[in-house]
Image 1 (cartoon, one colour):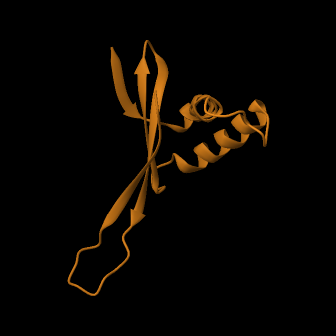
Image 2: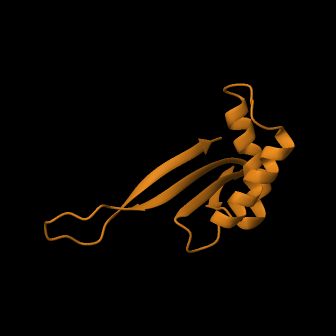
Length: 97
């Protein structure tokens, strides 16, 4: 059975590993090694996962292991001259299972 839950800072290293798998599976990485990327990406994810960040992430968990992820960035909508409520858009990224 697969369950979905909010990603936490404790998930960051595994999410970085999945990001490597996702991106390196499409083309051979040319800018940095696996370890360097995972280190850099883990640090970025730890900065972006806490509440209050414009990024949100969820994980798919199967047999107590993270099997997938999806990230969403909340983007404020540009104002317009009409009567409006404050609106936001969502940018979905890194959907990988």
